[in-house]
Image 1 (cartoon, rainbow over the protein chains, first blue to last red):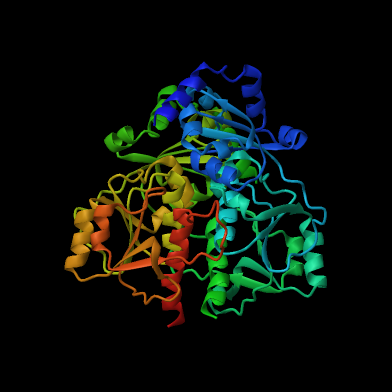
Image 2: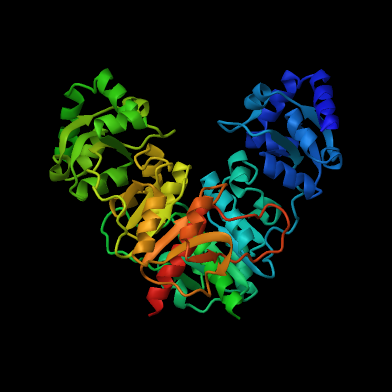
Length: 273
Length: 273
């Protein structure tokens, strides 16, 4: 306890974060800057701690002295630079209304070269998912249900958008997300003889359809669904049965929820085996 | 077409919305004002249209002239007052970054007196759901999977928060949401001999557990889970199996997704019958 108090005191004497660094971290909220700098931002005590534990590289650890004191020195030392900051400075940098105690600026992993190769197991293909919260929760659900690869159409929201990363709650560490032209990707799936499942309003009830443990689960845009030109690649049309006869306000499920239900159903089949 | 153009022209000559009415609608973003005025706001072309079709009462229909012209006169006439507005005025009123074309101010339905009576079918009880998006999507999933009643703990976010209504995408029309002391509510469920299912990290795999078509599905707070004092009422602890061995970033599913998966699993049992 005394060592921690001493550490905290020492931090207070350290120079605070520079205005230019604050501006730099804020600028990473923009995709253009992220693409140029090949860096993105992770926010939140738990997510930052788990990122540090995952032994991936860290450029800056920007955190309240209490946070830095609370983690093992070896973890904090994994950052190229550790910058203790006041709550006020954190608030300036944060994209959240109420900032957490820690932010990490970390490198974007090197893109894998072969973007159009279909993964061996089950994967999800996302056609123009716009909402950051939706992409984030889909990644979180995919990770939970053992789907290790997500292929986003080039129109999808950027994985490194702070709201996407936030919504994954760290699950981005466990899922490989690639961006691709889905026509090319699904054409490759077809060439490899892999099934392409699509979640649509009209389709076979997912509860009663034979589901494999390889192939592609294709999910469409929040309001427009799956693009017409991609439907030709679909081998099985799935639907989630609706258990209501209500006439209004019940056209569809949120795409993130539909993803969770369908992923769960694929996983359940392997669970019962 | 000519009639519509004429109608649109007529609207242009109408007085625009008053500043005090704009302020009034904005003030409804606050729960205190909603509670006092017993009014809430619905936003979005589709949701407003469906609300009008549902034949529920409408105080103000505030919309672009094009929207008003586009719906049958009988529908627009269902509002006590129809106010054509410019896009700029809509933007002032809207809680969305990009406003839709229509907003309706509608009365809060009269609260049902018996808040603690357990509904006959399957219902969901929500313990301290804080995030408006989560409450909204849980309502949307409940409606889809045939759950007609949701009992919120008094600490849950307000149903009539604009973000909650938005996230339901209109499903609030089909689900009765009540606020209650969950201890009292669950005590009543116990007295009636109804099962109380809870979704927890540790529990029987939901895929393999016997599930009934009556009872309560209890879901907990986003980070703290279900309150300790409510666990005594739980008759069956359910868990959603995790299909990954990843060590980091995969503690739990988002509560909305967990709700969708569990609701789907309850529904599937009745589907297979």
